[in-house]
Image 1 (cartoon, rainbow, N blue to C red):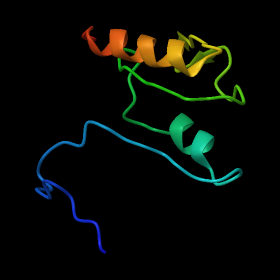
Image 2 (cartoon, rainbow, N blue to C red; image 1 turned 60 degrees about the vertical axis):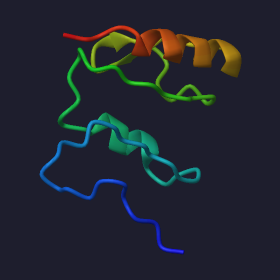
Image 3 (cartoon, rainbow, N blue to C red; image 1 turned 120 degrees about the vertical axis):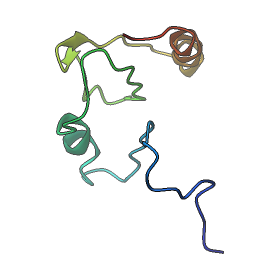
Image 4 (cartoon, one colour; image 1 turned 90 degrees about the vertical axis):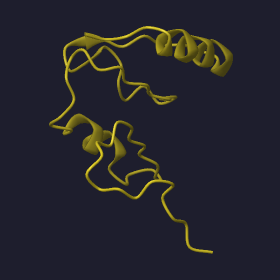
Length: 83
């Protein structure tokens, strides 16, 4: 089965991005090279290997040791708006 986009209107902005791949496929490199990422954007990483330890684009990266805490923080973050 070929997957089709729900809304394939190319004039609309793509506001979400997902990188998935095996080890060494370039996910971290691609995310770090995103030219459109601003310091005020909300970015969510599931990063068990700590590739984003410290800072990303000048902002502190919050770390969570459990998926439950990570998920709760993600929900709380979606309730805020960046400016």
